[in-house]
Image (tube, rainbow, N blue to C red; front, side, top):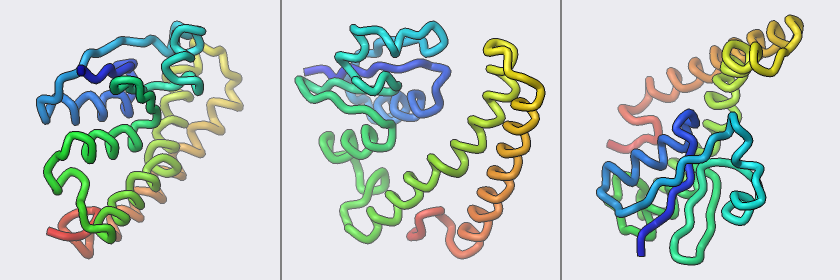
Length: 162
């Protein structure tokens, strides 16, 4: 059966899942959901993902959200090559570390800047809120990028290995 992918193309996590599926020629059907138009909060979509977030998948009768979790599931359920998601538990744990780390670091910092520079005019944020978001985004991204540079100075790949 075909895997159903619910995404908003403006969402980086949505695009990451779509790219994994496309790169590996995994049969899927895309259902476009607009976050900006509030479609993730509809009663119909909440039957797909009660959290009202994108991306989501439905694989037969199995519903799953959260991009990194979805990608892990796809790698294992579709038996993708080891270089996507290793079979070795220690290597897998290292990949999981970086996937989880991303959410509260690079993604968080980027989202602060997106909210300040893209969403602020739409949501009519105060100048103080915009300034605070920009400051937080800059600080988080600078710290995160320094951390990544340090990790990359020791290995050719962020999760180690070759």
